[in-house]
Length: 199
Image (cartoon, rainbow, N blue to C red; front, side):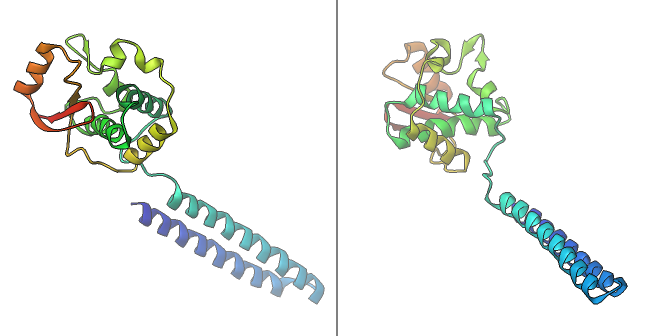
């Protein structure tokens, strides 16, 4: 989709450029004197070139601007960074990436809300899905540069989660929650302080 859009814009740019050049040549013929003809030709071709360069900038932006794997608002971006920092701020890059992947996987899954903010703040039977939401830690963290970089990488499509939709810190989880995870979900792997699961 990205390439087809840029190709369309490029085609439009060349079309406009060609039309303006033709227009400039026709205008030359109608000019009264050689001096007038020359001035009109230069001005018109300059306008054509400026229009072409403007469209080239648009095409370059379309190609170079970030294309995330999900739609995110500014609020979603801030929420994702905060939940990753709150859940995995003390872990390495991989630990942070896995948490970001789980949130993004949920956004993509029809059984969960379709945006980051609603996923993070979702409640099931009046219970929050992420402990930093319930204890308020999500609002207290300072997001590190590494977390920012990891979140952008995840949004650009870096995924090492194997489709994980859940994770828990077994060391800190309540017994009933541990039993639910182990009995109701499919265990995938452990990394850092978290166990990762899918349905």
